Length: 70
Image (cartoon, rainbow, N blue to C red; front, side, top):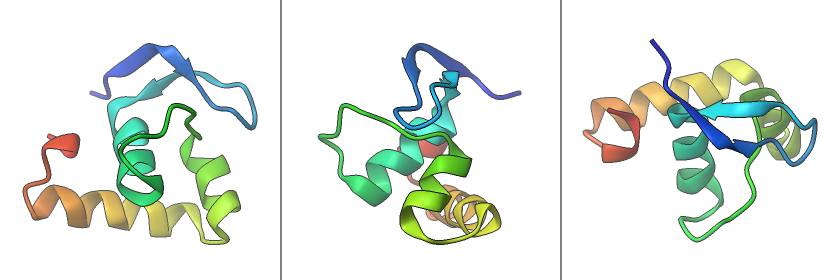
């Protein structure tokens, strides 16, 4: 079950209630001090990678024990 963060929304498409994983991957890839977040689809587009690439990075960071992806 994905937890959603109700006060965060994607700055590109406006989708509301981003998941904890979406917030975490934004912080890992764009910096922990960011205040604006992308959904997975918009983050992938912004970075020029596939959605699957983003999901693979989430799993990689989770396997490494990163607390952002518990």
